[in-house]
Length: 378
Image 1 (tube, rainbow, N blue to C red):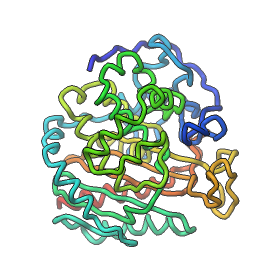
Image 2: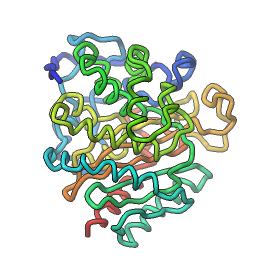
Image 3: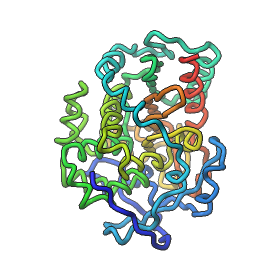
């Protein structure tokens, strides 16, 4: 892929009104709580991001939510892109050949209502307990949680209700944009700003523009390759698909991002700074990460709400429950012992506006999951 230099210009203040995180047919009417192009942030963290602890949020620059040309980009690199640790690219590539076996393990992971291990390695009991405790906190008010994680070195992991239907929210952008560049590498030359904004800022306008241009066929191809129902690609924002489905697609994205052509590309670097990823915020200054989050607040106030509240119909597509609310995170963490891929889906409402004034509900879970993965190689 030809790497285009990014031009430094002044930071441009963004509007607090964006497009939908729902399907393209209702994108004009649905409030976008899964797009961070309009998150109120500052540039002051850029110089100190590398010194922040993994548990401290780092503010990041925002991009203007318009159809921009190359000259309209507002910053060359975000704080997290500058601070992101490097990882052993040759070691990362070495796991690609094992992906067929990894997918078989994922297929066989139990759809249990309790945290279940799979593979040969077993994590320490105290680490498993911490993950269970975090799940218990998240589900205490009747919310749904679904997760699956696999360590590529030991080919082992854990799963919790990985087959239940969930809404992907903006996590779909990660795998869709990878599939587009896999099928249409020339697309980056013309639309690189849209690829960047859709990943770094979770900008819906840029994502939907690319979806309209390239359609569902690139993602359908990936679905066929990894054993996921092609219906997953029929909607710009798929609903009722599982964490296990998304995990299989991330195994394909992992291979693509770590291919010879992509490893050092700008596009691959965007995943180091996906907006509002709990994993990025909690682990991204300690380990290299490639993630994509997705979220929906569930109310027009953009704030977290009581799960017993009635959710407006426009968020539900006729479903009176709050399954259109979400706090999701997906991706790869490249630890010293080897990488792991994870998917976490919930129906917990989350708003990221106002400088992350509300802590991400997944912060504790992603730290506990990382500790569990570290224990798999102890």
